[in-house]
Length: 309
Image 1 (tube, helix red, strand yellow):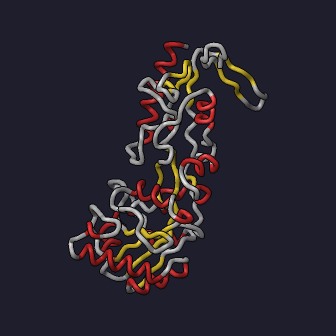
Image 2 (cartoon, one colour):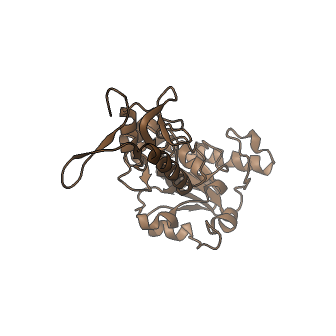
Image 3 (cartoon, rainbow, N blue to C red):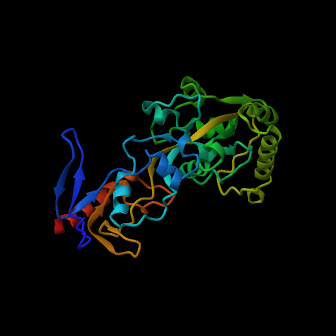
């Protein structure tokens, strides 16, 4: 950065041949977010960040965010938010090749409990939202619960049209994970106690949930449920220990529509542009497609940076 003008005029690079400095008219930051950095995740996302599975490149460690902040840019909204999915909790062995086969995409059809045996979020909203909510629960660990009817009608369905069906009763144990099964909610709650869950609380939570759904009064629940009003009444009943997995962070550097980095007063940092996941605030907890956002911001940042380079 030029100290007199405040303009970004190049970058210092590292590599196998050692450090070097490249001078240019504009710099575009596109380092892929900070989902691979536990310190930044702990600061912004969750005190249990070290429990999150990384469902992405381990090199996405927030270099772009750190450099932009050092150059005077501001952080965006949504630094606490991320996109990800639920995966089977340890002792499951999560291999990148099985991210899709063992992911619990059917969480919106299920009931989610934390380690206290309580519901903590409206699971029916979206899998990525439940994943974020669980990341802030004790130990970032919970359980998805469903009955045989939900299993047959919703769990045993492809995640994408015409895609394969991955039966969790098969693929999760094959990965070393746990699937609890019981013939009553009381017995399922007792099985959960081996995982540190108070059985009486869990049983009361599940039974009160089923009663509210059966009565057509989901709004009476402590955590109301808006849709996917599936009962827990057809045995056997299942519970799968889960932990959140993070794919990419939603927050990053504050930018404008030209993908210029902005300071806290909303003024552009001269010569600095941001693209991809480093450009924060495009998503805010919800998710509509990371590749599309990267394509658009990459094009806009490149076009506008080229005009001043």
